[in-house]
Image (cartoon, rainbow, N blue to C red; front, side):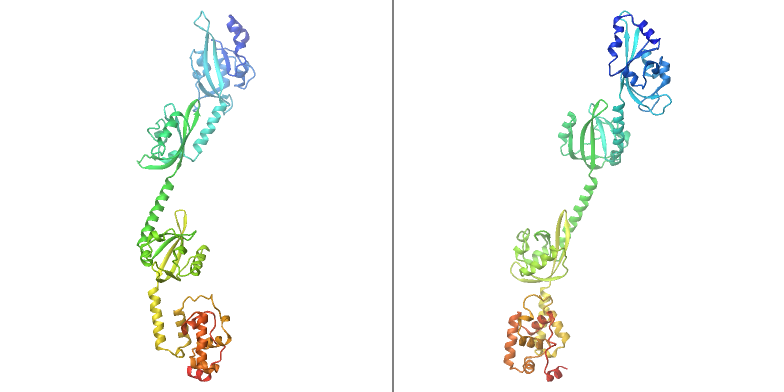
Length: 506
């Protein structure tokens, strides 16, 4: 019946050939009689509605409306008079109307159609001879846009999209709103000039040029102005995209404000440390952990050593010859390289003028910025050591006879004179058996006469043995020899003492 109506409608050759022209088009085409009958539809139009022939599409406009429910993209239902098929019958001319199409009885739409109208008139008649509905299936495009929309909104990374034609913002995600404190309505429809995402950018001119050309804006630091008038440091980058058929620019951001605050706090902390370091009355230095180079010294250090800042900074301590000996330097550097901190380690250093300075040295591993460093602290005990030695010498001058002292006093005097005797160097095996006997009797508090009587030798022989012992172990005083022996666990207990001397000592 529809076929007969179609033939009666078309008396001219042009209309008879119309079906042949549109049958193979990718766009869907529906021909409608002015009396609201659906005359014919090409295969593309049928497929876009999931039907196989015109009868399933509907014989009339009313049947079509009953079988397919339409709504706009904003989820508002399309009223009956606003159906594109109704509007074309009413003679309305329109283009690019986008609707979602749902089969009657179903809840979710199956397709998204973009529809436009066409009215065909006879050459000699102003009345329409045929009404045409032209349909494009844009479901895939809008599905992709929906996926992008969901991803864009769910992405925690701040982002905003502006239309290139007028530089107005058309989309903004929650990440941007959270970062800036703006409300969505305050952002949308405003321009790049209103909310300047390139404010204070390090390459602002380049960014504006790329934005005007619709090209990629490279990453750069910028400062966003916030609603309260403060600013936020960010990294901004722009990527051209298409939203529908409109070219746009997607701006994405990385919030650098936490980094700036952390850097500010670190800088203030380092400034406080530097002030404290420079004003400290204790001689201090900062050195690189790798290479043992000094990076900084304070005023107390230069005052103690006599080295100026330019003379010692950037040089290994071994080259400066700060340490008394290479053995001392190697011992201290080995401890630092092994990750150990020194605490009140006694060592001797040399001042610039060659003067010896006895110090207690402490170190602490620290970090300055990204660098591993060592903080050195030096306590000058030269005067204290001198006072202690003067005390010992005074006691020795008054009390020449060591037999007057008890064993505990001898030990204390030995520790006082040599608190950190190095166990390396000459050992007991370097002494002869007779020299060890003499040294043992010295450790037990015997004088030369008692040693001579105990060993049954002459006093000169004892003095010769004592001189050789001093030369071998590197000392020149009796108490130093006792300290040397005690450091090696030798106290002379195995040497028999003359009975008369034992009674005298008792």
